[in-house]
Length: 307
Image (tube, rainbow, N blue to C red):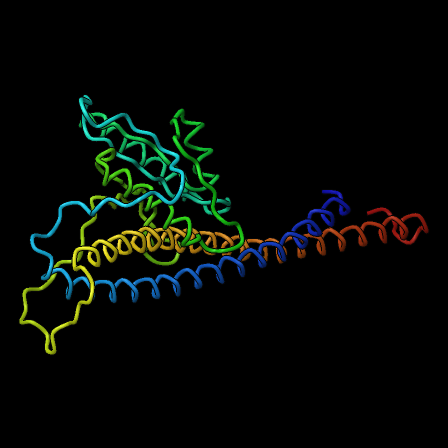
């Protein structure tokens, strides 16, 4: 029979862990719902940008292939060789979005496996890929797998991803793209599909696919455009790309927190079940110990005769 003291210590350890699991579950639930709410707000803003583009694009003739160049507002972490006389395939930036914290299962491993598949495909196509990563956990796995990173960023531990980070990255990429130093920007992240459900997904951010403008009759009254339509189009298109990146970062955060909530919910239920089971075991061992001691006392007092 196992030592009752050791059983009691194990039970105390499980009881001390249960409140921590419950707190982590509550935090993950709150962050998950906050990410979903902010995603809805971002989609609403995207719809407004789409309405502006629908009104402005018919006045831009012909539609530009690239946005007009603008000055860089921040130092770029990337450097590219001159575009003249370069050899090789397309120059592509790939941003991998992971998590800053653990306790989310295969969240980071899944996106890293999709990244390795993507890099193999780009190598076959002859593209020159510059790899960037966002999230300490995914950066650690990529370095462990000998994947060189041109830039590694961190996410907030206590809050949702910052829109400033998305805007700064987008402006740097667009500056390189408009100067013909960069051909494409791809994002690899975990798309949110419900509680604890996500899928590693590849999205091409640049060149940006603006929403299709339906060929309908001109609205009445017609929109009044008091500035250069091309400048307005370029500004709204840049905001569209920035908001798209921010929306994908929020979607990755929603997938991360939902996965963490599901794991913490399962862990909390397992802890409660273990507490019930070990409580019964401790009580049973205690009863057996008391019965044995009473038998020994009765035998020592001569109250129990030979069988």
